[in-house]
Amino acid sequence: MIIQKLLGLTYRVIVGRFIGPEAYGIISVMIAVFSIVATVAYIGIPQGVQKYVSSYRGKNDLEGQIGVIRTGLILTAISSTLTGIALFLLAPWLAAEIFNDLRVLWPIRFVALILPLRMLRKIGNSITDGYEEMQYTAYSLKIYPHITMVGLTIILAYMGYDYLGAAAAFTFAYGTAFILAVYYAYQKIPEAFNYNYSGRYEPRKLFHHSWPLFAAGLLGTLAGYIDTLMLQTFMGAREVGLYQGAYPFAAILTFGGTIFGSIYLSNASKLYGENKIGEMNESYRLVVKWTAMLSVPAFLIMFAFPQLFLQIFGSEYLGMGNVLRILAIGFLFSAIIGPVSKTLQAIEKTQYKLYITLFTATTNITLNYLLIPIYGIVGAAIATAGTFILAFAIKLAVIKKLTGTQPYRYSVLKVILVSTLAILTAYIPLKTLFGAMQLWHLIPASIIFGTTYTVLILYTQILEEEDLQTLKYIKEKTGLKSEKIEKIIKKHSQ
Image 1 (spheres, rainbow, N blue to C red):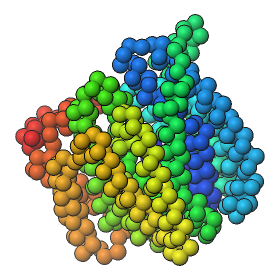
Image 2 (spheres, rainbow, N blue to C red):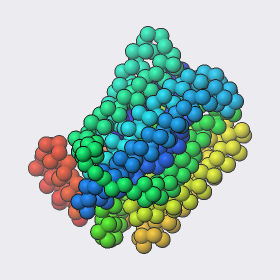
Image 3 (cartoon, rainbow, N blue to C red):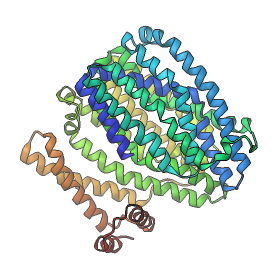
Image 4 (spheres, rainbow, N blue to C red):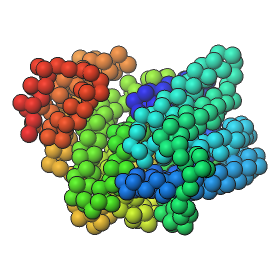
């Protein structure tokens, strides 16, 4: 995830800084259209495949796994091909009538061509995720396409291609990632790709589970990109590009939840299938705590020093400081509620995800429609942040009702207090000494904050038994060992 975020940001910086805000706006619209239409194309099936591969694996039911994989492939092949054809044909109308900019025509057509290929990647990743082999998704989704995309964009930009080069690089990278995903899925369960083995086919069961996920995913994706699309319609590509200078930094705050969310679904599905509700709830609370330990410090650094981040895109983007702050508040609320949708999927209450998303999507669309014509880019940021805060309150109530527990340990409050003290320790002296912040100030700010945060985490005994177990796994995976550090951590943990 760290590699993906860094490379994804690098791609955006190359486009936004060296090709320009207008080109960056066009690329942002392309990505928005691609994400929304892809949700339509896959009708929620890949999530259902992961759910049932995990469940059948827990029951040693090979026929069930084979059947759900093949059913998923057939259903998504049909829907993604038809959706891709429709998008390709509708691209001229979208460019002229909806986005008021013919330059988005071919970027939209590029991504229309790769919808069936992306379908193969998603099903492949769902299979390996169902086996809790997360490294394969890391290779085929997080690392390969982003390395390819950045490398091709640099080459094409150097050769003089503008936004079309960036769009072609994006399309090629995501279009070819299926090769790795399908290869890894075949290595994991070759029987599903060998028709000498029979499967048990239950398309109604898979579709019944998946359609609420599809509807909720479509509404959620539309709500997530509606600010970008409405900014393009009301104000133009340049404003979209400036807004997208702030947006990716704020979105980084959710990466902690994304790290744990995929494997949490497989874990929670198995625990729920074994009727271990208490263990599932504790797993949820632990994910929320880890997410908070990553997201809250990142939020405070971003809120205190927004210009330091925006300078990466260039001087044209420095006016987006308050936009970044507003978006960061919203994304923080989105992060620290935890993997609600994964829990609803695990306990087979996907209709609640649909209800939540329908309400929040309607709110987001309405707020953007009302605020963008009046307040412009700031209005889009307020609409997005307000929607995330409303969604936080609704999800908190739903998870309490369905699981009988709330997702926060007392240690999460400690994380918030410790993070606040740490950012004040970094912000006050730097602001007093230097006044206006420069990009290099991020280095001493990070060192002061990181040191203070680590010390306070230890001395307030935020670390618990499960955290020590996690650190042990990290040590085993990385080979990093330090007896002195281990003694300090054990001494200052619960």
